[in-house]
Length: 255
Image (cartoon, rainbow, N blue to C red; front, top):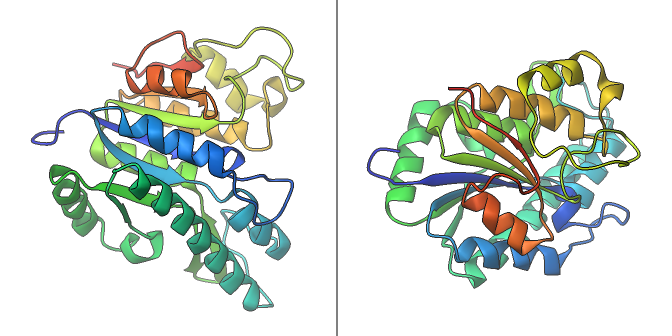
């Protein structure tokens, strides 16, 4: 980024920073480890975090996804938003503790002002402030929908063209099968990704990994390297921040 320097965009997976098996359960140790590792890297950072056992829990109860849907009980929308703000507060507190100067930008407030958002991001980054985004529930023509952290990650990559995009997940990388057998795929090439996109069963680690791979493919087409690393392993995360190949799974940006 002109005038900003090297920039990385990092997605804190909900499966890393929360315990998805228990509603509203934070994984404070994993969250603090991510924040601490980020604080040791000199690059500018933009953070996106998922919902995990906070937002996802209530979104599932409401039957919501990324498509617009009418919701009978509006209290469910309030609960989704409330839980995401609670999780975001935990993320902000952790990042602040490690000196990262976090600044939350909720999707609801910027979804209709893209030019203003870009100017805001440049200003914040130039002053060593760390913008933080999160998946959210948004009103749409016929009800409400979920704007996922993965979609936000692609949107930000398209806008900012970072040095790299890192997805912090709860496993060591992408496996060749749904039962996580065999060696990790260290590098995903476009032909493999096209097969994944054509046939979901060809690769699936957790519920959302196929969709993440599809979004990573779109990001790689922007010329941005994409990494999938275990967010609970600080050394792997730091290597990915440096852009070192051979850690986790990488999809190289298409030049």
